Structure formats: structure tokens, C-alpha cells
Image: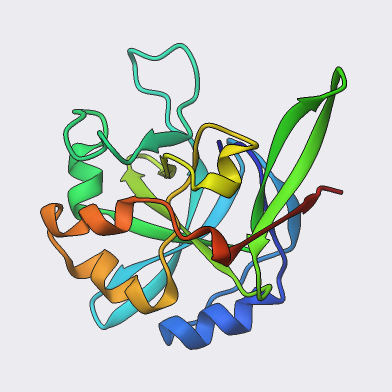
Length: 188
């Protein structure tokens, strides 16, 4: 999880209204690692959009790291400081997973049942450029049929708690969302 996700520019108005800020995103039905992703983070007087490259490549890593596990993000040296001070949300329509069926890889699309935006939890790294890592968690029962991880999804009513709470207070948000919120269909 989650190496691809979908964003439609139609969510811009919904996200702008929820966060009381201007949020502009271009449609990309196949966001992939190393691409520039639109995120929401805190600003002096509320929220702001920050665009970030998806993935980091620490000196010790041979590959791009795009996800961090929610269970260890607060203690791993690579992620600890960003998790404490540079949390963000990635508004999207949904994400993709593949599973092998009858010897073929089949793509599935995971979205909110009411077709409203999902908010994937992430952390930012501000170096020469701003970079992003999304957070994953153990999946709910429905999603577990497709992959062993799923994104940490922050519900709209929890957005202020996500940004304003201490690391210890965030533990309840780091678990999977109830499966009743997620719809799964064959991907395009």
C-alpha cells in the first residue's frame, strides 16, 4: 500500500470549503511516487496548500520511501521529527491496490462510499524541496482481502485533532477506518 492514487480536480471546491483555504489540484487518475502531490497543512491563520514530491530517499536507503507505518512513525528516527511537527493531509478520490487472481494482476479502486474526498495522513520533509511520505496502517477486514496495509485516513471531523494534537493523542486516529466508509470496485 499505497503506491498509486486518484485525484479529480472536482474535489478542489469541497477541500477548499472544508479547510477554508484555496485548494487547487489537477486531475491525475494515477498519481505515482516521485510526482508532485497537493497537500493540506497548517498555516499561521488556519490551513494552506503545499505541493510536495511523493517520496524521500535518505542516504541509507537504496530506494524511494513513499510510506511510513503508523505503528512506528513516532519512534523511527527518519520520521519522528516530521511526524511531530510537519503533518499533512493528502485529499484524494481514492487509491489503488492490485491482487493476483487466476494468475493475473487485477487492479481495484478504493473510495469513500459517498464519493466524497478521502484524506490520507502524511508527513512533510522540508529540504531543498518539500517531500511527502504517506502513512499506512493495518487494514480493516474488507481491505485486508486485497492488501496487508491501507492508508491512514483522517475523517473530515478529525482534521483539527490531527493537526493540533500531541503524538500520544493521535494513537486513535492511526488505526484503520471502519469498513463501512470504503467502497471497492474494479479499477480502470
